[in-house]
Image (cartoon, rainbow, N blue to C red; front, side, top):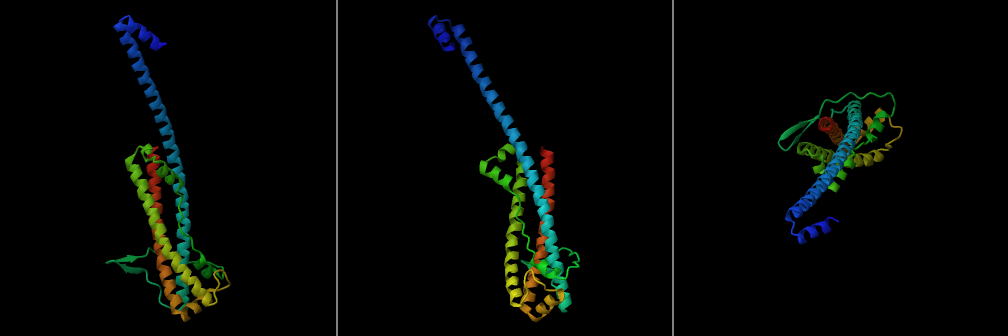
Length: 247
């Protein structure tokens, strides 16, 4: 209808009317674009809120997992300390020289357990940090970092993911040591979940220097793992606070 009216005004050479009709068209297109942009902006803002909520839930899950990982790591360290002490061997080192600097394990809690096979079973426990990154992967795969509308927050999220990957990479060394220790325990007739007391385990370690050496490596790696998940938990808690501030 508007097109027919414009055509009529052109034929009548009514340029003033043509100008008005043209302005109506331009304004209508502009309003339509603005409404579409506003709707897109609302959708992006809603999706941003969903992402931040889900990221917070993932981080809370990570925080819980770091606590579990730390607890099991300290249990392994404490159990190995008791085994070496019972065997009459010198305690495993709390430090190691790496690339020009001495790395020291954090303070080690005492191991306490009334269960007669607790030391053997604690060494069997091998929690590794998996992490919960479904939301992060969704943001990356969909190219939605821009929707977060906060470059500083994006950098913190990406830095946290790199920290997670660093912890997971270190876990690979722990797993390899665990596998070697498992083989050596079998060689010494020690089941990973069997009825081996502290005294039995200490006797095997005292008679098998290779087992003792691997346990010492396991001791330090477990202490380092505990320290790293503590740092990761602090970073996760700081990121949760940053997300709450951004919401």
